[in-house]
Length: 441
Ligand SMILES: Cc1cc2nc3c(=O)[nH]c(=O)nc-3n(C[C@H](O)[C@H](O)[C@H](O)COP(=O)(O)OP(=O)(O)OC[C@H]3O[C@@H](n4cnc5c(N)ncnc54)[C@H](O)[C@@H]3O)c2cc1C
Image 1 (cartoon, rainbow, N blue to C red):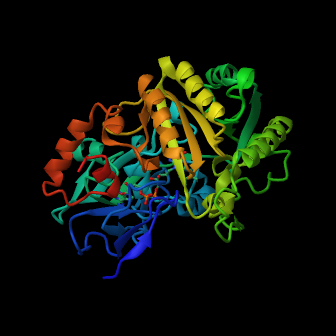
Image 2 (image 1 turned 180 degrees about the horizontal axis):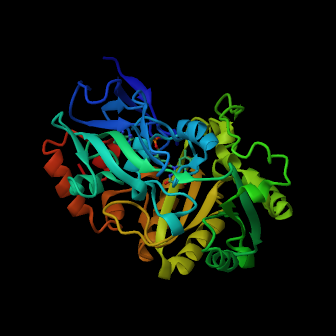
Image 3 (image 1 turned 60 degrees about the vertical axis):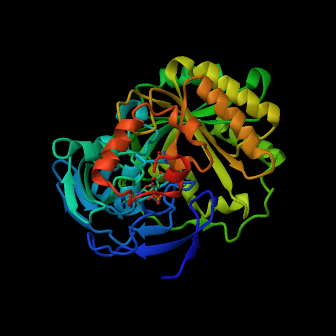
């Protein structure tokens, strides 16, 4: 089989891999060893890259749905976009969704993705009740909180290292409309936005966009968005009153080619930030469709190309609640001093979560995008030190550069996870470029 160049959403790193397309669940055969599952490649770094990649997007059938409880069983290659297109018009929505709908169910479980509702509804894995997994031995097993529970909990957030998820069962949530009651609240600095997050704890969804280039008394200047699903009564006087569950996935704009590297620099980011802040400050509150609320970037296909051919790194960390204020201030100060603005800088508040290997812990998380430019890696090492000093940790699914020690410090249950991996994959068949770099496999 010939090799193919492939990368994930950040465009870095690019590797040459054999890609095996899995079409019939449980029947994959190919080179075993140095093998990892891949969904839609929306992880930013190297977590779904390996010598041999098993492309799971071909197994994409809905298997069962209970319209009393909202429990859906489907194959792992089904995308969130497909679920939305089919189920939103019937009054059901995803329990947890990240900032893009172009991910698979398998990818959502393996990264244990979070959304804007973590403080109330935790991660996607929390809603999963059963999985069917293809183990390294070729055996297919069912696991749940009561059956092979060690495998179940290690697979949630386990980055594909325990086996290939073939099917999953999880609950959707009932909605009356496909609209969101949204408020956009400007915050002049970090203290204000953190106060707004505290005051918004009862809202199901909250997220803030930060202007990373703001300095001094405006350090942490942001817009906080909060929202709730709109009920029929909320849209009765709007043009959507007759189409409350309107949904379609069509009509995306696209970026047809890679922008020249360097198009996004501190000047263009400053201009964008100023415009975005003013626009949302004026916009205030209102009813919006769920797509622009949850997936603003999905409206532009291949938006990652604006970073140019060299690609970009996404940097996401979480700090414990008690250290979040000081730690975030220090990180933002370092970014502002360096003048290395991030085009996208997203702040969220995580609630409490007990899990083996998933990223979230109670506290604030910041996600930043940096175009690959000279000096970036050195600068990020400086940020790593600040994050570790404040007891934070990094998100697997965004990472492509951390060293093993820096990464492992944040995950106290890693040894337990690796024991379970060894039990179900004694010969180390499943490993990714990331798991090798981080010395997990
Ligand atoms: C614009 C954008 C916004 C995002 N916002 C968020 C966010 O708000 N919150 C968040 O948590 N994440 C976010 N992400 C990250 C994204 O949700 C995760 O990386 C997700 O895992 C991608 O799913 P995928 O199907 O593309 O998987 P891939 O990127 O292909 O793989 C990701 C991981 O899942 C494993 N995997 C995939 N399929 C399977 C399977 N069937 N069995 C076993 N393992 C499997 C892979 O081995 C790999 O370790 C965002 C990404 C983008 C591009």
